[in-house]
Length: 442
Image 1: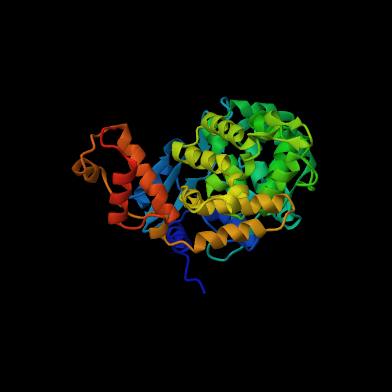
Image 2 (image 1 turned 60 degrees about the vertical axis):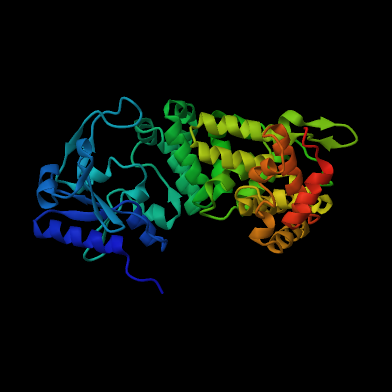
């Protein structure tokens, strides 16, 4: 049983303060939509007749997060609520934000500027009554995404809405209303005017909020995939050996990974699920059968270029590239020696690597025997067995009469190899090994 939602409690207290100040106030946006859909509510937003000056007077500790647009943020502990003054927007010249706004006293003017009908429902915070100026309730009940007013105008105002529409349709399992879809596909090329950072954030949310497969099917059908991720689009129609991939081509395989990707998956894992086989198109050959020699390494290079272009943080890029580069190594696990196996298990975020392998097997309609073997072998090893303290150090080698240099690394690496294999386990054994196998003269 969950306790009271502190963000909702804060929103209701702020709404009461606005009501007591004789201002109109409503819950609006995602918090209303998700409550009506019986989904968890993450963010609370209030819309009010109070002017920005009045908001500053009523809530002097509020942060101005969009002063030009009449938006302030209130925080209390870990809870936060945004409050926005009713407004109408003037012309959009940059495809992102209006050049000017007019603050309004009529809430209807405020909802008409919003993107989709189900995001424009107003809720009386004290009675729960819904005020619907755009037939959003009908669309919500029909599980339909519809732009408010002229969809061409809505998408032209803020071109990121092209991706937001797909994200909402995928996450909520909604159909996109025909005229909205027609406008979206017609305006898809305009997405190139949106910054890489904003595109990146929407793609990340499509991958991790649920419905990733449908999200990328819609990106494909709309033409956005070819524009934003041509490396992924090239997987379409690339055949695979049916004896190993009865599911079909590389794109079908990738979609199956996305279908099995759990909501809230770690971002590098989600990106790797999407990009792990992008190296197959350039490495496709037919000899005795279809082969993709070196596709993991090629895919790692492609993934790095894609993520750099989209301006992902270096930590996300490095983690994703590592997952892609190493995703085929599980095939060699039964033949690995103890040392090689332990080094494999020491890969950063190996749990993500293991989960990618599970998804890869499911995407190939194959049994999970290999995954279960890898999970069992990893579980049998303690952290000390994976990363044992060195039997000798560089200082020990100096005491033995060795001169610092390249030989140091060779000796220490050799000792670690034997330690991981289990053929050396004590300091005395390591000392005898060095005396026997290495010449102090170098």
